[in-house]
Image (cartoon, rainbow, N blue to C red; front, side, top):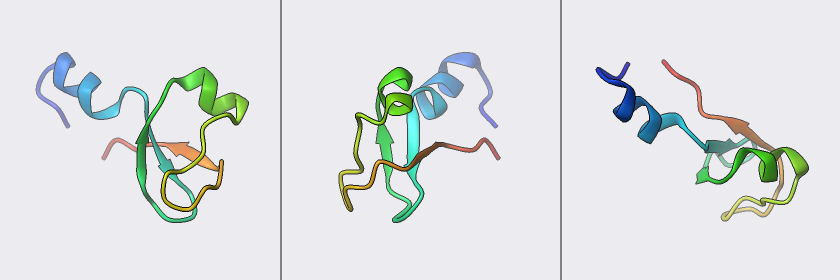
Length: 53
């Protein structure tokens, strides 16, 4: 999707999407996997990685 690696890293690195309300959140990977990062909007801790189209 991106034309160069830096743009790809800005758009997709450490970006997660809430499974309930579809809000994007930027956070460290290990914190998300440990369940320490909640969604800003609804408060759930169910986050997934942003998909590359």
